[in-house]
Image (cartoon, rainbow, N blue to C red; front, top):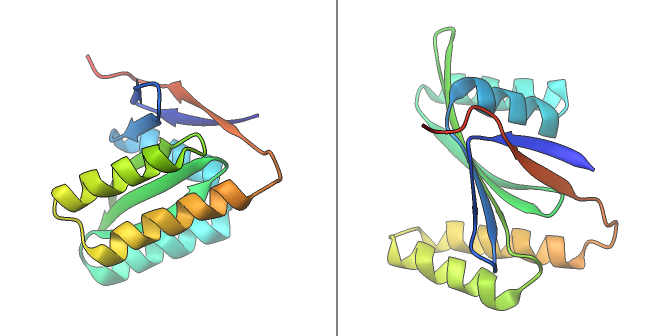
Length: 136
């Protein structure tokens, strides 16, 4: 089983959410999820943008929302991972929460597309969230 380090885990019974906001935890998680060449491309795009970039992806059973900023030699990032446990109702609840919070339709659609990818993936590869440097 793969491991993803986060700073906080929220399990409400329907979904499991992981949040990584401390830079060293975010960077550790990114290195665990992506090959070096892919991570270099992400950092290059963030640096070229000159501002924060964000993207949706998936890692094992988690939908990943990442926000990355590279300023000079500095790095700032945040990761939000969510496992809907294959539950369409939980995914739709999350979708509606994003809508309520003003997320763009395109982003909400990307979220649902990643959920569908996970539901249709029959590899059975999973990951476990582990707290590293928990919030005080």
